[in-house]
Image 1 (cartoon, rainbow, N blue to C red):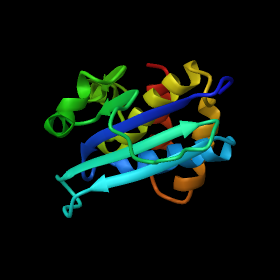
Image 2: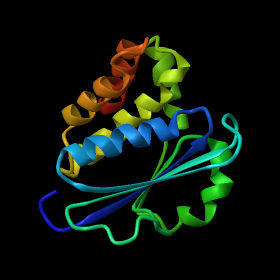
Image 3: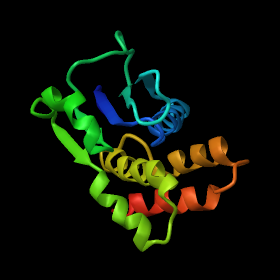
Image 4: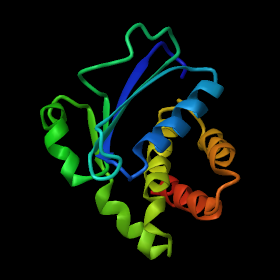
Length: 165
């Protein structure tokens, strides 16, 4: 991030899609890259099927208040999350609907549970294009967070597929 800037990202999906894991990995990578970061998770009582939101801010200056009303980038991971964020869609600079990209998982013979890493890859490419963080830094955080879990290779491949989108 060369000039003073703050980018506000809202990720909206369903519980069980890995929204919070995706946000955690991203914010850790951004923090390790020396940026100011805030992450406010928002989810209901239901672990699966309820709405799951992640409010992320990244900046090269101090973040005064972590919550925001108008994201610069809205990632919509599930159509069922649309009603929850509908009023923000017209106010957002960029809206990315990732559900149509689930087909990339099938095309690359990846399991459905890697959808969050596919989404993270797409988001990583956007942030790399804006010169905020390198995709390699996020990939390293995926390895750090998921390194001892089964399915690391599938998650990394899904991330790579997303970065190539």
